[in-house]
Length: 426
Ligand code: IMP
Image 1 (cartoon, rainbow, N blue to C red):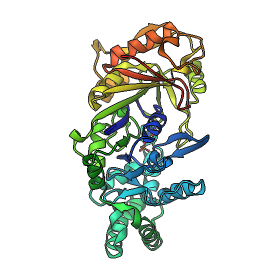
Image 2 (image 1 turned 90 degrees about the vertical axis):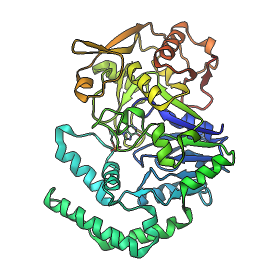
Image 3 (image 1 turned 90 degrees about the horizontal axis):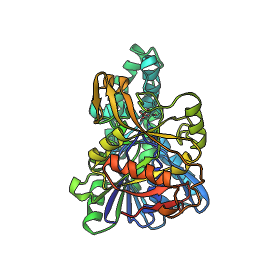
Image 4 (image 1 turned 180 degrees about the vertical axis):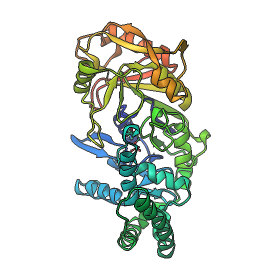
């Protein structure tokens, strides 16, 4: 490995955590590039279960340096809660965790606005995680946001916080009829955060570029999934960052040429949490059964995920967008005993058959998937480790996914444990 990125090629929750954790073991540096504590990687290390929302999962591997890049939004309270949680379980972060001076901060007012805006939108709500992600990125784009570096300079912090809160308090009061937020206690908290974070703050882009130039093994940890990308996803039902390999480059501060391999991760079926169109979504008992079988509840919010058939139109689009070199298909074991299966190969939009993902939300909303039917299988796959051990129906299913999505499927995962992987010969 030189520099590898792991990207979700569906709507997030593809099971990237396990793939990232395994690669992190042999990495020198692991980097988070976008999103914030809306993400959630569940990693099982030495029999213990860790949920990491913000800190790269290389932290669980001694000797690995971990970087929170400039494209990430950092909630100061959350960052140190996660650090303390790790310390309490014997994971030392000193000298192993680095935070970009350029990363923007999520403030309490962003969390408050996230809730208020969602409530205000009522039926049109996005179903956000409520972590303040959208409002923080909005302030970044509006050039009024606070960055990590601002907390290291008290005079600058006071000035920037004053002007930000003046604007936000106006908004809270006049638009939402909500209580305003006091400046002094927040200032004190941010000064305290500045003191604590100072030893971790670096020019993260420079660190990562140096590591790549020195031939170190750098792993970029994608968060969310391609279909939630701010530009490429099902806008406006998306997150507020760039979740593709392009976001890895801008969010880590590296050139696209410095990314040597892109690994796409997809579940053997689809899930989506939050609102927004989901053409292959299942309903009623079929949805409920798959959710139960796959334990499809959000790692961050605990919300039930909607489930659906594998959408090869979306996955192919994601493969093209990210320049995916190889794909890992996860949760194949979950489909055992689920009966006959379907894969969407195109959409019927009005009188038109579309093989490419529609750009317009109205088209996605009325898209009727055109399915290819597959025989299911009943065998338990969780103990299998070689591709030829898979039932013929499962092999046919995987072969077909590979043909449709346009990238080689390198591995198939058949359970949550790291050992439950089946390599696939090409
Ligand atoms: P936000 O990122 O909290 O603003 O939420 C925007 C949309 O992205 C909502 O539909 C969320 O459910 C979804 N989302 C955000 N983070 C994740 C994730 O890590 N996995 C799956 N969905 C996510």
